[in-house]
Image (cartoon, rainbow, N blue to C red; front, side, top):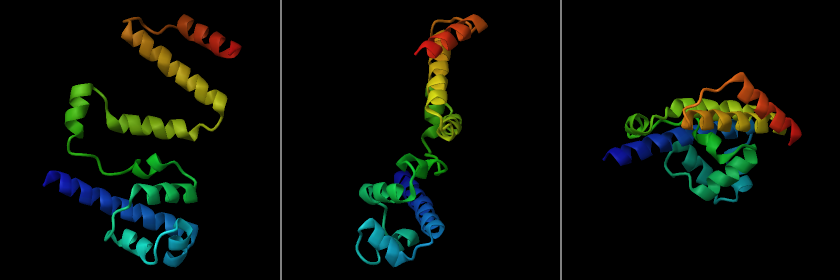
Length: 147
């Protein structure tokens, strides 16, 4: 029963996302059906939550609105299993979501590479029990500058 409830909550959330995107685009329901190549009335059923959004339609919608598919789930309701996974793995999914959102906002490719290199260096330092020092950050900057 719990999985069914989670699916219903996710479906309701996605229905709202779908409607919001249509309204931002300024398109009618019929125009959305045509733009996505779905049968007449499909988009209205998606918005009402009467029909679940399939992967192909989600992919087409993401392409239409110009955003990655995973952004549709940035503020989606979290799973009931999440606290268990957070406690077991030591990973806070909210922190991860914030990190990904901030990373996406960086549009300059060289800045993204620097962020990735920094995170890898931090992870390596933590894995080996070494503190991250200014010297290791300077070496990283030199390596990135030469790349």
